Image 1 (cartoon, rainbow, N blue to C red):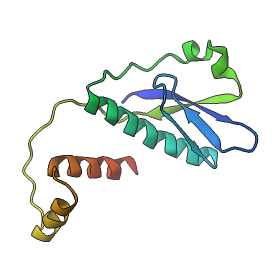
Image 2: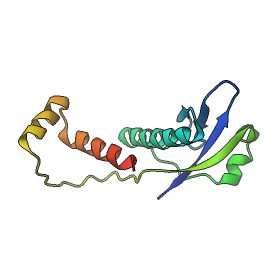
Image 3: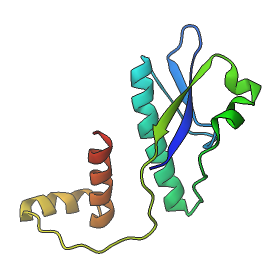
Image 4: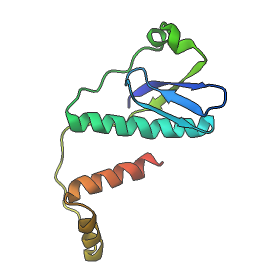
Length: 128
């Protein structure tokens, strides 16, 4: 499993902000440090999911020394490692049995069962 560096910082009169040097634009925040870290896990997972869907390459995690060599990264922030979800571009066909009423409810919400079920599974597994 890959771990990416998140920078947690706090400005006066604000929540704890989180940014990922390896993923420009992937930012989040939380009212407490723990909430910010939890939000960072979700933000990173969603950001990577979007990159995979767009066909973008996922970068290798940067070295902490390289990130901290940049002065702006050292200003009032601390490093936290955030686990990235496993990324696979290969889909595997499976046979799943579901109650008919559940399948009807799924079909009312989406026109792509596979994508819907994959996203629901990812969310459930990310909550652990």
